[in-house]
Image 1: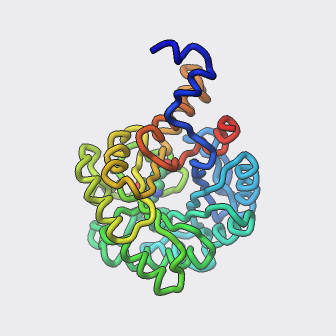
Image 2: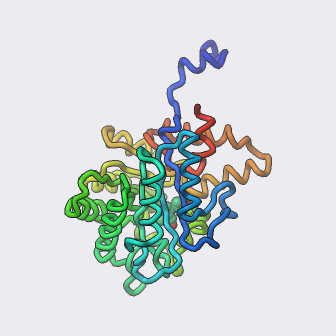
Length: 317
Ligand code: PBG
């Protein structure tokens, strides 16, 4: 076996998995209040941008080779119904419009969820401490139409509401936006690895947790049911999230739906663990980051949402 490992060129001949910058999706946080911008302590190297500074960040990332971004908005005002999520003049709609202008062929993906916009921090409308699934669907559909009209290529519902893909698909079609696709966070676990993101996006729930809507980390067969429903409802692309701890799930979804494009989200906690270990001198950041991305792709993901995107793109040339 070692003959084919002897030199870098020989190893290159038998390499099975290649990650390229075209596979990466760069998540970007956009704040409404300028004073809320700046570095995120729990995510070294990642910042919160205003609409203006976001435009500069996208220019730099695309110069490095990044072709897709995933936008999250953080509004100045939150309320019980998350109204800034679907306000035409809201921070996220403005960010999408601006991103669209920065680069014609940039893939602009808009995260669709209420948790960054609600005062209680849950992903839907709360009724006596429970989430009202169907009342939430209407708002997700409304937000998706606003993002489509602002110029998003794909909307990415992340709230794990039942029926969200169907509700969004029919709202987009009714609004004359049949070309806008749905990247569904089909398989999203109730993970403790979202901690740093919740600092960044100010979306930690004020009471309870998300276990009544996000999946139990113990389950893999259930993931195939989630994926099947979303495919039936019209999802254009599926996602498994988190990624590094769920490589088996990525593999199973890939095998069960061989023809459906699949993304995996290397989440904030997965990113920050690597950064923290590297900052302590315990691991080599570049090697560890590239190994993690390669593993996610090897497991079966076509695209990877990762906070390493901008830094990793030049390493992948
Ligand atoms: C919002 C959302 C979350 C993430 C992406 N979209 C947080 C959550 O569900 O609590 C997590 C991303 C990350 O940790 O990087 N629903």
